Image (cartoon, rainbow, N blue to C red; front, side, top):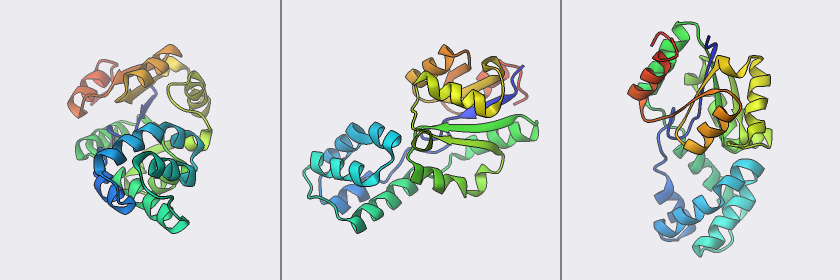
Length: 200
């Protein structure tokens, strides 16, 4: 029996960011160069959660000068806001699960600054736990982050369903016994959860 549904955030509950253009403009580099540098260094940022290291590395890799503290703070602000736009279809699904008394949690690869922004959003009310890689010092698809999740929820793996847009993260969850589904939109997510007997 499924007791918990756990969601990734970026490209699942939250829409893909549109902030790369403004971020590149702040660093005065070409958007393509910025985007490539951003994804080159992002996983390390989601783990070590140090914005000075991340945006200094992004600036260097994209051909920009070294950003000062004020610029880094503005880059963090715009970056976090860019990833914070919710998908209305997913919010409806979340509300339905909450109304059906299904317990909900978040497991996201994200820096601590993003975690603090998300924690105060009104839409997170239905969620009982919000876990972020930058706080845990662990990242999906490392098996240990899923074990940490299960310990936090105090349930067995087969009592949890997990939705994430990255197949490697889903494979990591499945590897510890969690019911994992690659997210392909709200309609497909509903079908996946109904297949587990959930009333959505």
